[in-house]
Length: 229
Image (cartoon, rainbow, N blue to C red; front, side, top):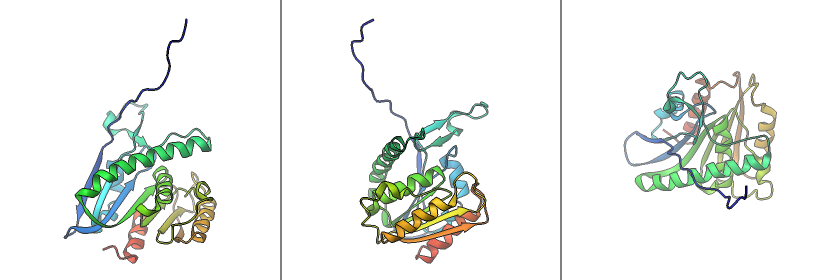
């Protein structure tokens, strides 16, 4: 059998998002929320309830990759989602993070004309925290506040270009009992980022990896201290 042609074709997926507004007046911060692995935007909105009490535009985005429900108890729209494809290889990891970041670029470009934003915060948990950290460092001019929970900011990807972070406020929250993502690597990443000029707060909580209400309440307290209302 002779191979006549091979290549790649594009298969498009529709990725849902929802933009909410809280508070009066048009000029206010934009808060972008990135959920964890096997979560979806509806689940994450419920978990982030304390943060949605802040006056802001709240953008909840769903990861593009569906996670199959092996028990077949959920419809496709209820399945969890993931943000990137990871097979253990660093090169694949960064490549997939960049694809997801470019997707966020396109979505934010569509969103910005419809709002009057004063600053932008990105909030990510676990898998969404890895993407938030990558986006915040690769596109630092787009982000003012970065809050990551139960994940790690991949500073090693940017060790050759560590400038332009002086305006960036970063909060890294980690559970002392987190067995999924260890805290020491995140602590080292935070120290490195602080050395590059960012204002970084690393805080360990008496929690595990599960996203309890303690996490968003700590983020809310931090943002309030930065002037969010």
